[in-house]
Amino acid sequence: MIALHTAIAIIAIILMIIRFKIDPIIALVLGCFYLGLASGVGFEKTVEAITGGFGDIMAKIGLLIGFGVLMGALLHAIGAFKVMVDALVRIVPANRLPYALAVALTAIFPSIYVDVQVVLAAPVARSSAKFIDKRGLAWLAAALGTGIFCGYVFVIPGLAAISIAGLLQVQLGTYLIYGIVIGPVTAILTVWLFRRMLSMGWWNPEKDEEISEGLLEEESADELVDAGQRPSLLLSVMPILVPLLLIAFGAFADLLKFSNPFIAFIGNANFALFLGLLGAYVMARRFVGSDRTAGAFTDGLHTTGEILLVTGVGGSLGAVIKATGLAKLLGGLFSVDAGAPIVLSILLAWFIAAVLHLAIGSVSVAAITAAGIVAPILGSIPLPPVIIGLAIASGSMFALQVNSNFFWMFKSLLGLSTQGSLKTMTTVTSLASLISLPLVIAASLVA
Image (tube, rainbow, N blue to C red; front, side, top):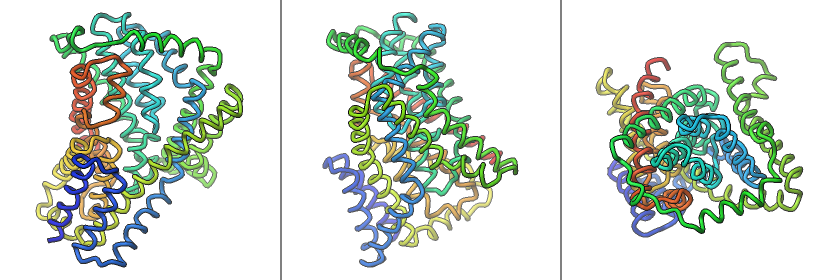
């Protein structure tokens, strides 16, 4: 009955979000209450599990999410992200630009704030498409979508990456070591394969594109207003690159056994991201003044609250599932055959995340919910938690489509029709999810 009630709770959460348009936070909490009470956990212990699970995940990643979102808001205010992407257009040959854009979005400046990424990168993709060919917009749009979400789920400080690592108690440095390889490789292969699809007639500009005059005029106006207030390329990239380097250095130091208290301190993800936030704050004060900096900070705080709540409640769901004793029940399934569970466990984690994303439409909510479901049974799975986390990351990208707010932002900002958005964003997230899955399986052989 515990498994049945868990399935009912998860299906109910999905239906509340999709069919009845209930906010994910409300839906997740209601699901937690149903599961705890229906499974016999009891009133008091259900509440304890919800609050305890929320507190545990906040203690692990609350500051990281807050620092990352605030940093993204400040960089958005000063136009730093646009400076980075503009630099790609100047230095990369046109036929290599989609690869460079995808890898840069994945590995060099992955972001918790994916809305900022698409808002700032879309105008550059549109303006540079003419330097490729008549399918240039499709290729660059696909590269943009691929890069954003490969970075989002595989590379720290992407929200999904941080949330998965926190829920599964994986050190961020360990996650980064694997993700910084799987993410860019996935992005490159996806962009290459999509180009092959374009050459076989996948794209029809007359039906798949619909850039309006207003969109082009808005882009020109933005260029005039912001051009004189942007930092240099070096300054723009520092708040993101420095934390990544510090976290990676700390992880490699620990892996190679030369770490010490100081290295552990500077390689700590909380310190590293705070350093990035501090740098972004100083830059914002310098380039746009104290008033606009305060406004950007306030906007970031509003976004932070929503992200923290949905992430924390995802931790609550995992805690309630653990309290029901489902972990022991499912653990028995993984111990039936000593040889099969390795690949099956990866496929199961991928499948759970993929189904949740198809139903809910949010990569982060799908990743958080899947990690919350899998976390209680990690001890019964014959794989390192980081591999299960990467499998969840892979599955959570699958087929981003019309039930996602990001899908409609992408459509409008890139100047695509709904059909064109399905043929780019939905296609490349599906491809990236399927391409990254065997890479995760391969990573399990060396983990």
